[in-house]
Image (tube, rainbow, N blue to C red; front, side, top):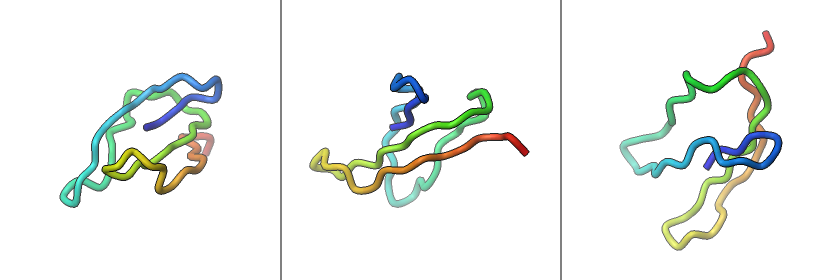
Length: 54
């Protein structure tokens, strides 16, 4: 899941062993937070991601 700074979910997508990324082309530049969940719906990894601002 990908969240905006105000906590809104902006992308929810399932990943599998053959898919390792998500398309973020339509998102505006900004700061986002991500949460990767296991099959059992347990958080495996969380973090911050910055798009743009070069």
